Amino acid sequence: MRAPGTPARAEGRTVPEPQITVNGQSRPLAGVPAHTNALDFVRGLGLTGAKEGCAEGECGACAVLVARPDGDGSRWTPVNACLVPALALDGQEVVTAEGLGGPGDLHPVQAGLAEAGGSQCGYCTPGFVCSMAAEYYRPARPPGPDGFDVHAIGGNLCRCTGYRPIRDAACALGAPPAADPFAERQGRPAPGPAQTRVDGFARPADLADALALLAAHPDAAVVAGSTDWGVEANLRGRRAAHVVAVDRLPELRGLTTDADVIEIGAALTLSEVEAALGDDVPLLAQVWPQFASRLIRNSATIGGNLATASPIGDLAPALLALDARLVLASADGDREVALADFFTGYRETVLRPAELVRAVRVPTPLAAHATFRKIAKRRFDDISSVAVAVALDVVDGAVVRARIGLGGVAATPVRARATEAVLEGRTWDLDTVEAASAVLAQEGTPIDDQRASAAYRSAMLGNALRAWWHEEEVP
Image 1 (spheres, rainbow, N blue to C red):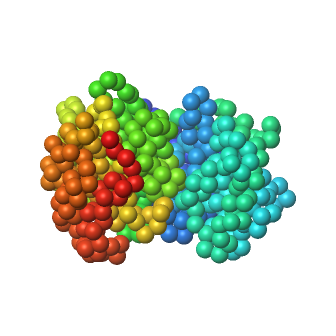
Image 2 (cartoon, rainbow, N blue to C red; image 1 turned 90 degrees about the vertical axis):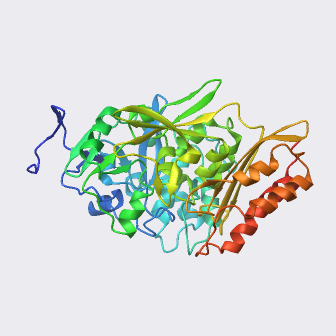
Image 3 (cartoon, rainbow, N blue to C red; image 1 turned 30 degrees about the horizontal axis):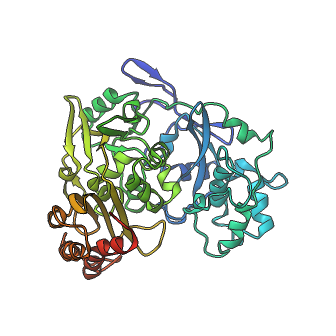
């Protein structure tokens, strides 16, 4: 083990000791354990505005701002500090609610909340301040009530104030003043990824470096946005002898489109994919607003979401309906597998030791008609009880191709192949919908749990096509 203060070495290169800039001040990360999250780190500095509420990214009390790349400049991006490892922010710039403003020098967001009566106990307020500030500084945001996207604070929960005064404060925000230092900061590039090497944690320089690390440490925990591993570390005490962060690997962060395929880098966050694709993939455009919250989407990556193999993830059903394929990288090169063949059991996949998801490939042209149906206890920011994604090609009134992905009804995300077979070759009419719905209700192996009963899940499967038929016209 290295003595404290001794620089790490990687492939013959000296790697600087890790540090993080918090509210404009450089703070050393040397000696911080790999499982220590950014929330505990900043609170250890005396910055106790950010709080732990749920420890799993649902309440937003822990939100802080990170300077992330945005074109030639940067953008203040809110993340759940309770989930991201502090070491994953090596070399980055972080701002907490205290860094935005304090007594006698309130930030406009803080002043607006105070004036509107948007804070009572104050536990959740610093997290709201950070999420609201990120929207306040959103480039080209129109000032006034119609310019503030209230979904920007959808991942922040308040139990005592109620949301009307918070929303009033948000919608009353004007534009940042010309000399606002946080607005000015966005005009300069964000810090690049630091190559980190400390005991138990590594951020490799490139894909080859990452694969070599995984070959040397096959038991390593691979993290990107850490929205899954962070929960395991917080609530279940999960620890790993080695953690390898892959979220900034350049080979995993591209997005290209050609006549045959859309290739999405596995380390792109869901917010980045959403912004890059816009409405180009309508089925995914339906998924994003229903996928957790903006705070989670700012960290969670498309590859990480699939590699965790959760049976209740929202993204897998949609990508199954899109006939997506995964590019898996190892020291032996790339191999490609259909997403439908990727999941092998509960939280299990075909990934081999020292292998990573490099990219997701969606074949084009896309199906002409698609829908995503999510059944959950809350409209937003909740886990699915059932998720159904459908993509159809209908020609001259007949279904020529059907793909249906399901979540929450089996140990893995699954294709509803029996229902697809019923649909294909038949006229798209109510009789076909009823016949297919009867089969769809029998797909999967749903169970009773705290979110829903097996019977309810089956009923929701059966209603998905009917609801689509009655709500939308599909020629």
